[in-house]
Length: 92
Image (tube, rainbow, N blue to C red; front, side):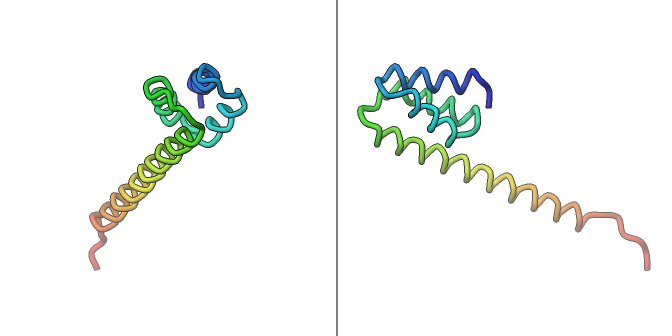
């Protein structure tokens, strides 16, 4: 997590009138720069009117991130299995 993404998210939350601590909690839940940047873009463009809307977007972003991670793990496992099957074998 970079300081820039973290600070941008907190600044966007404060500009909407929420406490800085709310931004810190969001950043801790989002964990990655990409997720924080997506949330910051959402806050700046949608200007949500309630903390519930922000929490819903947080859950959506975290869900997408988790699905992406699962996909990468699955692709890696598939590639490893393919490499195993295609390995050179000794003649018996």
